[in-house]
Image 1 (cartoon, rainbow over the protein chains, first blue to last red):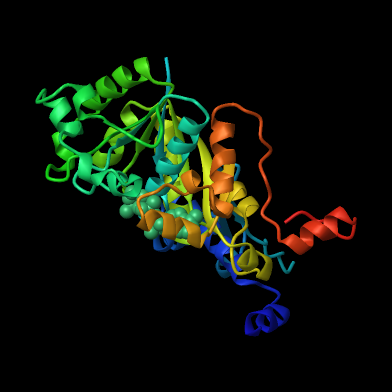
Image 2: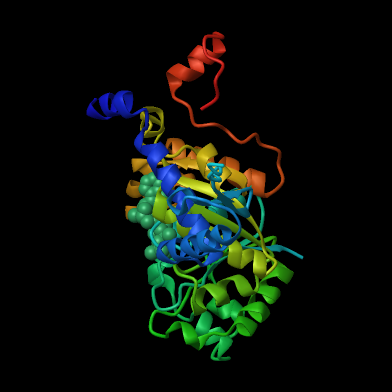
Length: 84
Length: 264
Ligand SMILES: Nc1ncnc2c1ncn2[C@@H]1O[C@H](COP(=O)(O)OP(=O)(O)OP(=O)(O)O)[C@@H](O)[C@H]1O
Ligand SMILES: [Mg+2]
Protein backbone atom coordinates (compact mmCIF):
# COMPACT_ATOMS: atom_id res chain seq x y z
CA UNK A 1 0.00 0.00 0.00
CA UNK A 2 2.71 2.46 1.04
CA UNK A 3 4.43 1.58 -2.22
CA UNK A 4 1.39 2.61 -4.18
CA UNK A 5 1.13 5.89 -2.34
CA UNK A 6 4.82 6.56 -3.03
CA UNK A 7 4.26 5.69 -6.67
CA UNK A 8 1.34 8.10 -6.81
CA UNK A 9 3.44 10.96 -5.50
CA UNK A 10 6.74 10.35 -7.27
CA UNK A 11 5.25 8.74 -10.38
CA UNK A 12 8.00 6.13 -10.17
CA UNK A 13 7.61 2.54 -9.12
CA UNK A 14 10.56 0.58 -7.71
CA UNK A 15 10.65 -1.28 -11.02
CA UNK A 16 11.15 2.02 -12.90
CA UNK A 17 13.97 2.90 -10.54
CA UNK A 18 15.55 -0.53 -11.14
CA UNK A 19 15.27 -0.04 -14.89
CA UNK A 20 16.91 3.39 -14.77
CA UNK A 21 19.74 2.11 -12.60
CA UNK A 22 20.27 -0.84 -14.94
CA UNK A 23 20.53 1.38 -18.01
CA UNK A 24 23.29 3.42 -16.35
CA UNK A 25 25.13 0.45 -14.84
CA UNK A 26 25.11 -1.40 -18.17
CA UNK A 27 26.29 1.67 -20.04
CA UNK A 28 29.27 1.84 -17.68
CA UNK A 29 29.87 -1.93 -17.83
CA UNK A 30 29.72 -2.03 -21.61
CA UNK A 31 32.10 0.89 -22.08
CA UNK A 32 34.34 -0.04 -19.15
CA UNK A 33 34.03 3.54 -17.94
CA UNK A 34 33.52 4.13 -14.21
CA UNK A 35 31.09 6.81 -13.10
CA UNK A 36 33.95 8.98 -11.74
CA UNK A 37 35.95 8.76 -14.99
CA UNK A 38 32.85 9.81 -16.87
CA UNK A 39 32.80 12.97 -14.77
CA UNK A 40 36.45 13.69 -15.66
CA UNK A 41 35.73 13.20 -19.35
CA UNK A 42 32.83 15.60 -19.07
CA UNK A 43 35.09 18.33 -17.69
CA UNK A 44 37.71 17.81 -20.41
CA UNK A 45 35.12 17.93 -23.18
CA UNK A 46 33.67 21.12 -21.67
CA UNK A 47 37.15 22.66 -21.69
CA UNK A 48 37.67 21.76 -25.37
CA UNK A 49 34.32 23.18 -26.45
CA UNK A 50 34.92 26.32 -24.41
CA UNK A 51 38.03 27.01 -26.56
CA UNK A 52 35.74 27.55 -29.57
CA UNK A 53 32.38 28.71 -28.31
CA UNK A 54 31.10 30.18 -25.11
CA UNK A 55 29.36 27.60 -22.97
CA UNK A 56 28.39 27.09 -19.38
CA UNK A 57 30.57 24.11 -18.37
CA UNK A 58 28.08 23.13 -15.68
CA UNK A 59 25.27 22.82 -18.20
CA UNK A 60 27.17 20.30 -20.34
CA UNK A 61 25.36 17.00 -20.32
CA UNK A 62 26.87 13.60 -21.10
CA UNK A 63 24.75 10.53 -21.53
CA UNK A 64 25.61 6.95 -22.33
CA UNK A 65 22.61 5.01 -23.44
CA UNK A 66 22.15 1.53 -24.74
CA UNK A 67 19.47 0.43 -27.08
CA UNK A 68 19.38 -3.03 -28.60
CA UNK A 69 22.99 -3.68 -27.51
CA UNK A 70 24.29 -0.53 -29.26
CA UNK A 71 25.84 1.93 -26.90
CA UNK A 72 25.68 5.61 -27.72
CA UNK A 73 27.57 8.50 -26.14
CA UNK A 74 25.78 11.84 -26.39
CA UNK A 75 27.22 15.20 -25.38
CA UNK A 76 24.91 18.18 -25.39
CA UNK A 77 25.43 21.73 -24.28
CA UNK A 78 23.55 24.99 -24.63
CA UNK A 79 25.72 27.73 -26.23
CA UNK A 80 25.77 31.05 -24.44
CA UNK A 81 24.75 33.78 -26.92
CA UNK A 82 27.08 36.76 -27.08
CA UNK A 83 25.92 40.00 -25.55
CA UNK A 84 26.90 42.13 -28.60
CA UNK B 1 24.56 -35.29 -34.22
CA UNK B 2 22.94 -33.79 -31.11
CA UNK B 3 22.91 -30.24 -29.77
CA UNK B 4 25.04 -29.06 -26.87
CA UNK B 5 23.40 -26.30 -24.84
CA UNK B 6 25.06 -24.56 -21.90
CA UNK B 7 22.87 -23.10 -19.13
CA UNK B 8 24.62 -20.09 -17.69
CA UNK B 9 23.94 -16.83 -15.78
CA UNK B 10 27.00 -15.10 -14.39
CA UNK B 11 25.35 -14.57 -11.01
CA UNK B 12 25.02 -17.51 -8.65
CA UNK B 13 21.82 -18.98 -7.30
CA UNK B 14 19.46 -17.79 -10.03
CA UNK B 15 18.35 -21.27 -11.10
CA UNK B 16 20.86 -22.76 -13.58
CA UNK B 17 20.94 -26.22 -11.99
CA UNK B 18 17.18 -26.31 -11.48
CA UNK B 19 16.64 -25.28 -15.12
CA UNK B 20 19.15 -27.84 -16.42
CA UNK B 21 17.59 -30.69 -14.42
CA UNK B 22 14.02 -29.82 -15.42
CA UNK B 23 14.62 -29.09 -19.10
CA UNK B 24 16.67 -32.28 -19.42
CA UNK B 25 13.98 -34.33 -17.73
CA UNK B 26 11.25 -32.75 -19.85
CA UNK B 27 13.20 -33.39 -23.07
CA UNK B 28 13.68 -37.03 -22.04
CA UNK B 29 9.93 -37.26 -21.35
CA UNK B 30 9.37 -36.02 -24.90
CA UNK B 31 11.39 -39.02 -26.09
CA UNK B 32 14.77 -37.43 -26.77
CA UNK B 33 18.00 -38.97 -25.62
CA UNK B 34 19.53 -36.52 -23.12
CA UNK B 35 22.77 -36.20 -21.12
CA UNK B 36 23.11 -33.62 -18.34
CA UNK B 37 26.70 -32.57 -17.72
CA UNK B 38 27.62 -30.98 -14.41
CA UNK B 39 30.39 -28.52 -15.26
CA UNK B 40 30.42 -27.04 -11.76
CA UNK B 41 33.60 -28.82 -10.72
CA UNK B 42 34.29 -28.61 -6.99
CA UNK B 43 30.71 -27.51 -6.18
CA UNK B 44 28.60 -30.14 -7.84
CA UNK B 45 24.83 -29.96 -7.30
CA UNK B 46 23.14 -31.46 -10.32
CA UNK B 47 23.42 -34.93 -8.73
CA UNK B 48 21.43 -33.94 -5.64
CA UNK B 49 18.87 -31.92 -7.58
CA UNK B 50 18.30 -35.03 -9.72
CA UNK B 51 18.35 -37.27 -6.63
CA UNK B 52 21.18 -39.44 -7.98
CA UNK B 53 23.87 -38.58 -5.42
CA UNK B 54 24.13 -42.11 -4.01
CA UNK B 55 24.90 -43.69 -7.34
CA UNK B 56 28.08 -41.84 -8.30
CA UNK B 57 31.18 -43.97 -8.70
CA UNK B 58 33.19 -42.10 -11.32
CA UNK B 59 32.88 -38.52 -12.56
CA UNK B 60 33.80 -36.14 -15.39
CA UNK B 61 37.38 -35.56 -14.22
CA UNK B 62 38.00 -39.33 -13.95
CA UNK B 63 36.84 -39.74 -17.54
CA UNK B 64 39.03 -36.86 -18.73
CA UNK B 65 42.06 -38.34 -16.94
CA UNK B 66 41.40 -41.73 -18.49
CA UNK B 67 40.62 -43.40 -15.14
CA UNK B 68 37.41 -44.71 -16.68
CA UNK B 69 35.51 -44.53 -19.94
CA UNK B 70 32.98 -41.76 -20.50
CA UNK B 71 30.19 -44.39 -20.46
CA UNK B 72 31.34 -45.65 -17.05
CA UNK B 73 31.15 -42.15 -15.57
CA UNK B 74 27.58 -41.59 -16.76
CA UNK B 75 24.68 -42.44 -14.46
CA UNK B 76 21.46 -43.58 -16.02
CA UNK B 77 18.32 -42.12 -14.50
CA UNK B 78 16.07 -45.02 -13.44
CA UNK B 79 12.88 -42.99 -13.85
CA UNK B 80 13.31 -42.39 -17.58
CA UNK B 81 14.79 -44.61 -20.26
CA UNK B 82 16.80 -42.05 -22.12
CA UNK B 83 18.26 -39.72 -19.51
CA UNK B 84 21.84 -39.73 -18.20
CA UNK B 85 23.90 -37.49 -15.99
CA UNK B 86 27.64 -36.97 -16.07
CA UNK B 87 28.51 -35.77 -12.56
CA UNK B 88 31.27 -33.31 -11.72
CA UNK B 89 34.09 -34.06 -9.33
CA UNK B 90 33.58 -32.62 -5.86
CA UNK B 91 37.24 -32.83 -4.81
CA UNK B 92 39.09 -31.37 -7.80
CA UNK B 93 39.13 -27.71 -8.71
CA UNK B 94 38.19 -26.04 -11.95
CA UNK B 95 41.75 -26.14 -13.31
CA UNK B 96 41.55 -29.94 -13.46
CA UNK B 97 39.73 -29.45 -16.76
CA UNK B 98 40.63 -27.43 -19.88
CA UNK B 99 38.34 -26.10 -22.62
CA UNK B 100 39.90 -28.65 -25.00
CA UNK B 101 38.98 -31.51 -22.63
CA UNK B 102 35.40 -30.23 -22.58
CA UNK B 103 35.20 -29.90 -26.35
CA UNK B 104 36.34 -33.51 -26.69
CA UNK B 105 33.90 -34.87 -24.07
CA UNK B 106 30.91 -32.87 -25.31
CA UNK B 107 31.69 -33.80 -28.92
CA UNK B 108 31.67 -37.48 -27.98
CA UNK B 109 28.37 -37.14 -26.08
CA UNK B 110 26.76 -35.24 -28.97
CA UNK B 111 27.57 -38.10 -31.31
CA UNK B 112 25.31 -40.44 -29.29
CA UNK B 113 22.57 -38.23 -27.86
CA UNK B 114 20.02 -35.67 -29.06
CA UNK B 115 20.68 -33.13 -26.31
CA UNK B 116 23.69 -32.43 -24.11
CA UNK B 117 22.77 -29.87 -21.45
CA UNK B 118 25.71 -28.34 -19.60
CA UNK B 119 25.15 -26.90 -16.11
CA UNK B 120 27.57 -23.97 -15.88
CA UNK B 121 29.10 -22.74 -12.61
CA UNK B 122 28.47 -19.15 -11.48
CA UNK B 123 31.09 -16.58 -12.45
CA UNK B 124 32.92 -15.83 -15.68
CA UNK B 125 36.31 -17.40 -14.96
CA UNK B 126 37.84 -20.77 -15.85
CA UNK B 127 34.76 -22.82 -14.93
CA UNK B 128 32.61 -20.69 -17.23
CA UNK B 129 35.14 -20.94 -20.07
CA UNK B 130 35.23 -24.72 -19.68
CA UNK B 131 31.45 -24.98 -19.60
CA UNK B 132 30.88 -22.97 -22.78
CA UNK B 133 33.79 -24.53 -24.71
CA UNK B 134 31.85 -27.43 -26.19
CA UNK B 135 28.49 -25.68 -26.47
CA UNK B 136 26.67 -24.84 -29.71
CA UNK B 137 24.04 -22.69 -28.00
CA UNK B 138 23.45 -21.07 -24.64
CA UNK B 139 20.51 -20.44 -22.38
CA UNK B 140 21.05 -17.41 -20.17
CA UNK B 141 19.05 -17.61 -16.95
CA UNK B 142 18.29 -14.30 -15.23
CA UNK B 143 16.01 -13.31 -12.39
CA UNK B 144 14.24 -9.93 -12.69
CA UNK B 145 16.74 -8.11 -10.45
CA UNK B 146 19.38 -5.47 -11.15
CA UNK B 147 22.36 -7.62 -10.08
CA UNK B 148 21.26 -10.71 -12.01
CA UNK B 149 20.54 -8.76 -15.20
CA UNK B 150 23.83 -6.91 -14.94
CA UNK B 151 25.75 -10.20 -14.67
CA UNK B 152 23.67 -11.75 -17.44
CA UNK B 153 24.63 -8.84 -19.70
CA UNK B 154 28.30 -9.55 -19.06
CA UNK B 155 27.77 -13.21 -19.94
CA UNK B 156 25.86 -12.30 -23.11
CA UNK B 157 28.86 -10.26 -24.25
CA UNK B 158 31.28 -13.11 -23.52
CA UNK B 159 29.05 -15.62 -25.33
CA UNK B 160 28.89 -13.34 -28.36
CA UNK B 161 32.70 -13.14 -28.37
CA UNK B 162 32.87 -16.94 -28.25
CA UNK B 163 30.33 -17.16 -31.10
CA UNK B 164 27.75 -19.03 -29.01
CA UNK B 165 24.19 -17.94 -29.74
CA UNK B 166 22.12 -17.21 -26.65
CA UNK B 167 18.48 -17.21 -25.65
CA UNK B 168 16.91 -16.06 -22.41
CA UNK B 169 14.94 -17.65 -19.58
CA UNK B 170 13.56 -15.26 -16.98
CA UNK B 171 13.29 -17.24 -13.75
CA UNK B 172 11.47 -16.63 -10.47
CA UNK B 173 9.11 -14.01 -11.75
CA UNK B 174 6.26 -13.11 -9.45
CA UNK B 175 3.11 -11.94 -11.24
CA UNK B 176 1.78 -9.95 -8.30
CA UNK B 177 5.06 -8.07 -7.77
CA UNK B 178 5.18 -7.22 -11.48
CA UNK B 179 1.60 -6.02 -11.34
CA UNK B 180 2.36 -3.84 -8.31
CA UNK B 181 5.31 -2.24 -10.13
CA UNK B 182 7.82 -3.79 -7.74
CA UNK B 183 9.42 -6.23 -10.15
CA UNK B 184 10.77 -5.92 -13.68
CA UNK B 185 8.52 -7.71 -16.15
CA UNK B 186 9.69 -10.26 -18.69
CA UNK B 187 9.41 -7.56 -21.36
CA UNK B 188 11.64 -5.19 -19.35
CA UNK B 189 14.30 -7.90 -19.09
CA UNK B 190 14.09 -8.74 -22.81
CA UNK B 191 14.35 -5.07 -23.72
CA UNK B 192 17.42 -4.52 -21.56
CA UNK B 193 19.29 -7.67 -22.56
CA UNK B 194 18.07 -7.68 -26.19
CA UNK B 195 17.90 -11.47 -26.25
CA UNK B 196 15.33 -13.77 -27.74
CA UNK B 197 13.05 -15.09 -25.00
CA UNK B 198 12.77 -18.84 -24.57
CA UNK B 199 10.38 -18.54 -21.67
CA UNK B 200 9.51 -17.18 -18.26
CA UNK B 201 9.35 -19.42 -15.20
CA UNK B 202 7.33 -18.19 -12.24
CA UNK B 203 8.46 -18.24 -8.64
CA UNK B 204 6.92 -21.49 -7.42
CA UNK B 205 7.07 -23.19 -4.00
CA UNK B 206 6.62 -26.56 -5.71
CA UNK B 207 10.17 -26.20 -7.12
CA UNK B 208 11.60 -25.95 -3.61
CA UNK B 209 9.51 -28.88 -2.37
CA UNK B 210 10.34 -31.24 -5.25
CA UNK B 211 14.02 -30.26 -5.12
CA UNK B 212 14.04 -31.30 -1.43
CA UNK B 213 13.04 -34.76 -2.55
CA UNK B 214 15.51 -34.99 -5.42
CA UNK B 215 12.75 -35.06 -7.99
CA UNK B 216 12.69 -32.53 -10.85
CA UNK B 217 9.41 -30.57 -10.71
CA UNK B 218 8.49 -31.57 -14.26
CA UNK B 219 8.55 -35.23 -13.27
CA UNK B 220 5.85 -34.65 -10.67
CA UNK B 221 4.20 -32.28 -13.10
CA UNK B 222 2.86 -30.09 -10.31
CA UNK B 223 2.81 -26.33 -10.34
CA UNK B 224 3.12 -23.40 -12.70
CA UNK B 225 6.91 -23.58 -12.95
CA UNK B 226 6.79 -27.22 -14.11
CA UNK B 227 4.22 -26.30 -16.73
CA UNK B 228 6.37 -23.49 -18.13
CA UNK B 229 9.52 -25.61 -18.06
CA UNK B 230 7.77 -28.27 -20.15
CA UNK B 231 6.72 -25.59 -22.64
CA UNK B 232 10.29 -24.31 -22.79
CA UNK B 233 11.59 -27.84 -23.42
CA UNK B 234 9.17 -28.16 -26.34
CA UNK B 235 10.27 -24.82 -27.71
CA UNK B 236 13.92 -25.91 -27.42
CA UNK B 237 13.11 -29.06 -29.34
CA UNK B 238 11.47 -26.98 -32.05
CA UNK B 239 7.91 -28.00 -31.25
CA UNK B 240 6.05 -24.76 -31.78
CA UNK B 241 4.79 -23.38 -28.49
CA UNK B 242 3.80 -19.79 -28.04
CA UNK B 243 5.77 -17.81 -25.44
CA UNK B 244 3.28 -17.08 -22.71
CA UNK B 245 2.92 -13.76 -20.97
CA UNK B 246 2.72 -13.78 -17.23
CA UNK B 247 -0.45 -11.99 -16.44
CA UNK B 248 -2.79 -12.49 -13.56
CA UNK B 249 -5.96 -14.48 -13.82
CA UNK B 250 -8.15 -11.38 -13.64
CA UNK B 251 -6.25 -9.63 -16.40
CA UNK B 252 -6.66 -12.75 -18.50
CA UNK B 253 -10.38 -12.89 -17.83
CA UNK B 254 -10.57 -9.16 -18.49
CA UNK B 255 -8.82 -9.60 -21.79
CA UNK B 256 -11.02 -12.47 -22.75
CA UNK B 257 -13.97 -10.19 -22.12
CA UNK B 258 -12.30 -7.42 -24.08
CA UNK B 259 -12.01 -5.18 -21.03
CA UNK B 260 -8.29 -4.53 -21.14
CA UNK B 261 -6.11 -4.30 -24.20
CA UNK B 262 -2.76 -3.37 -22.71
CA UNK B 263 -0.21 -6.18 -22.55
CA UNK B 264 1.75 -6.79 -19.30
N1 LIG C 1 11.22 -20.93 -10.35
C1 LIG C 1 11.63 -21.13 -9.08
N2 LIG C 1 10.76 -21.00 -8.05
C2 LIG C 1 11.17 -21.20 -6.79
N3 LIG C 1 12.41 -21.54 -6.42
C3 LIG C 1 13.33 -21.67 -7.39
C4 LIG C 1 13.00 -21.48 -8.77
N4 LIG C 1 14.14 -21.69 -9.50
C5 LIG C 1 15.11 -22.00 -8.62
N5 LIG C 1 14.65 -21.99 -7.36
C6 LIG C 1 15.42 -22.26 -6.12
O1 LIG C 1 16.49 -21.32 -6.08
C7 LIG C 1 17.64 -21.93 -5.50
C8 LIG C 1 18.84 -21.78 -6.43
O2 LIG C 1 18.60 -22.54 -7.60
P1 LIG C 1 19.78 -23.30 -8.36
O3 LIG C 1 20.59 -24.13 -7.42
O4 LIG C 1 19.16 -23.98 -9.52
O5 LIG C 1 20.64 -22.06 -8.83
P2 LIG C 1 22.05 -22.06 -9.57
O6 LIG C 1 22.02 -20.91 -10.51
O7 LIG C 1 22.35 -23.39 -10.14
O8 LIG C 1 23.03 -21.76 -8.35
P3 LIG C 1 24.65 -21.83 -8.36
O9 LIG C 1 25.10 -20.57 -9.02
O10 LIG C 1 25.00 -21.87 -6.91
O11 LIG C 1 25.03 -23.06 -9.11
C9 LIG C 1 17.26 -23.36 -5.20
O12 LIG C 1 16.92 -23.46 -3.85
C10 LIG C 1 16.08 -23.62 -6.10
O13 LIG C 1 15.21 -24.59 -5.56
MG1 LIG D 1 24.11 -24.66 -9.83
